Length: 581
Image (cartoon, rainbow, N blue to C red):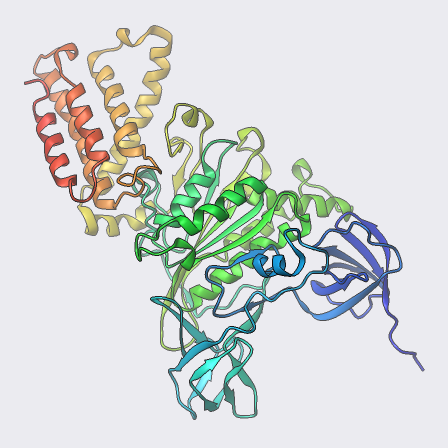
């Protein structure tokens, strides 16, 4: 006869990894409690009776011989009302509640639920007893935040007939309904973070994720439900761009993942986001935002988990029928965590030491983005757009993380340090950047602002390409050696860079640009070029063309608010018409 199960004990510790035996009953990616302090960990390898655990907390002081307890489940997040406005760490613990328990520094083994177990929510049923339900069906609603409806859904995989359902005030752990047979349906549900949430079907790109940033919406648009890689070296403005997208992007819910970023940078985000005013509601932006924070001094294994926590929350709100934007800053730090863990596991290294499965993991992450028809009734669609920053060492876009991202992302917004040093913000390199969604989204833009949109976009890219070539020639022979038409093109390209593509995140009238304003500015810039060419063809020398006045008029239109834009556009048109007069 076999005796009672033996308690697994640590036999080896190396950084964030611990090995324990016997672990014959463990499952891959099962959650465990490690050591006498109950550190949170996850089984990532099983060899015979030996299991390897990546520990999500600081392993200092962990000793050989300490126990390892299996929990019987994977790393799981409780999803429900109360997530909006919260700040979670890399494994889903609310930092405010953890601070109340352990102080400003997270003590090893600290535990807190992602959702407040004591807060009561007013549930309004949408169904009655006797209704047949299945995964994704909306049981009822809660007002999670003023003006924001939280739809309480049947968890995926559950089906049956409602034996009872009741309205009233409940906590997230209280059953609001029961199926025939006794299975309870709670205000909240649990979901393993590494497993994508199921959908009914994926939808084709239909409309853009409008960012409010002219260079993105005009030249490199991304579809709602698309994915974008934003590589850039230090100081190119990745974080400012992601904060601007969080504030002005056309999304109902924002999930911001600070993955391995500097502590002072994340402290700035935590300080700034509550002060940002949501243009749609006039209230704090934090009311529709979830922050997942894992700074560079936090345990590396939790960094690897943080992006999965963030995207699981994003999928949950997508399933309610909302447009969700996930900002991941940055995936390079996440890949570095994979590299460190892989090295400690003594896995075969790939390019630059990254694990050989880096591309597969990145692809699986990006593929969780999408515009979808969600499960259940009433029928509804939702979109999850992923914008991921990448921090290539030295700004080298040929490094593995950037290249792996390019293979699966639908758009590339490449940031250039040279443009940042020239004070061109956003510092987007229009020669390197691209969008695979531009043609599919062209009908939406033409219906919204005019049939000239695709032609203006194409002309702008061609003009900027020619501008780059002419500036290289001018650097060798001097601008005076160029023909008047070429010198005019250089001036027109300068106007496009300053008045159309350039944007100030700190100017209230310029921080966000509706697509209508973007179209008007682009049309004015090309009218400036066309009018100058007509004057040259009429025999006027370039020196006699007064280009400074229309240029200033265009810049004034760029800085105009909604109430003054029409007047500034009219002034710019008048100034352009006088070129060569």
